[in-house]
Length: 407
Image (tube, rainbow, N blue to C red; front, side):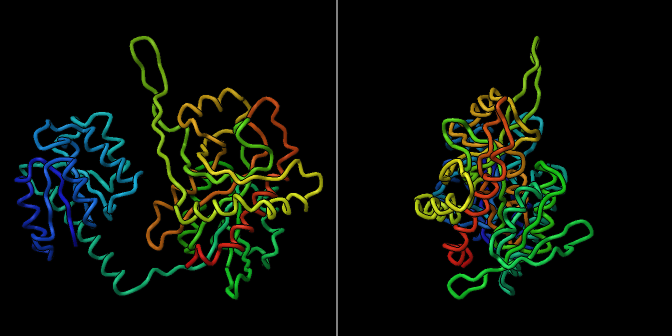
């Protein structure tokens, strides 16, 4: 068990260090640094099971404590390579009010935030409970391997045309079976290189992130998939994509996340997007099929009156809670990420469920195809083709690289 404490007031951890010794964590397993830059150095060179991070941390030893230093470090740990990412991050503060509005961003990127106190040991007990959990999980990993179930779980937002096109894939689909009291799934399988890859597909009862997140959590809990994918249709950004193009959502986020604030005269919405990436393992293999011109041409040739040969496009896709038919909204969302390629209603919910799951945790990805451009000219005539290209690009990916992604 390795612990890194990043706090410019190291003396206040004497009680915690004594309590850690009581559960078997030796003092030489605990490193303490006094500033964000020193924490960066440690995290670049040493893997830690737990990082205890003060909300108010100086950038350098001689600087004044500043919440931005801690927030910048947290962001880098989540978004950048080059660090040994700690197993868990525990925030600590002596005064939640000092953090102000930044506390929400801090809580979002940490396991939990503990409030330090000089007069009682409640914070020590909470920290010890967290360490005990990590120790118990490490013990489980030593005694048993993560027990995955199905290889690939597929979620669609709509039964028609999305799931309908998935079930046309030659993957030996069975009749629907109940997974729990409300969820029915279709099991399938296919052979690649002498290996049988198992599949399970279903659709959400309602459109939107909440319904998709709940369904995803159910599938992850009961099926324990290695991969969890979302197929279906989405709106594209005109000029960047065309009808039928298949978009890999990387990253995905809720473009409506934030809060409404008021100054002296006006009320405005303050955006706070939380972006979730596609795992690198998935992205690198999708990049390979992006250049499979012959295979993509073949997909188009088997669809009557296809509007064009689909491309595979990788980039940011935003999720929201409402169907869009106003081209101006797309421009507003592009202000959150200028590289935006698509907008839809569910992917962030699925990604959030996967990244929040306990072990064994699946790798999430979404391949949605463009059926319109979320403008006043929005029509439904390309929905079936988009659902078709989405399902068949998933087939291309899994039948070409499925065994590599599952190993």
